[in-house]
Image 1 (cartoon, rainbow, N blue to C red):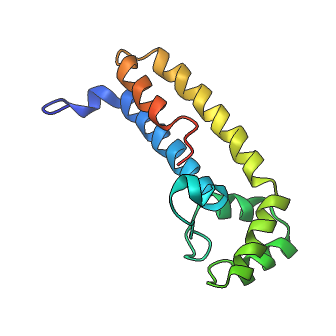
Image 2 (cartoon, rainbow, N blue to C red):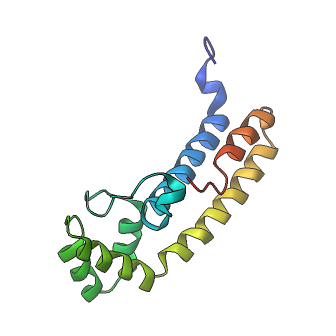
Length: 134
């Protein structure tokens, strides 16, 4: 892309930004729900008070009592607090919500890529992040 006028590649940019969002959603879910033996680390987004897709969606869909539970437990270093947050995420079925979102995003990306002149390169990028486990 060196020397290219990027205004001529807005479609590729949009596809790649969508892939980045897709990747981040996966990363946030793996941090919380992934097996440390597979992902190679113990997730700390909850303890580190990260603004993950999970906490944002959780705040959008939870009731007032659940919001209170999140405020009391999110961003605290105690494993008991983390367990409370993860239990709430399970109650809200956030894994299922994001699995559906991941499927829809993937289908949207495939459709967008099929119409793009650089589809081979874009498909190779998508294949690297599709349904990743780490």
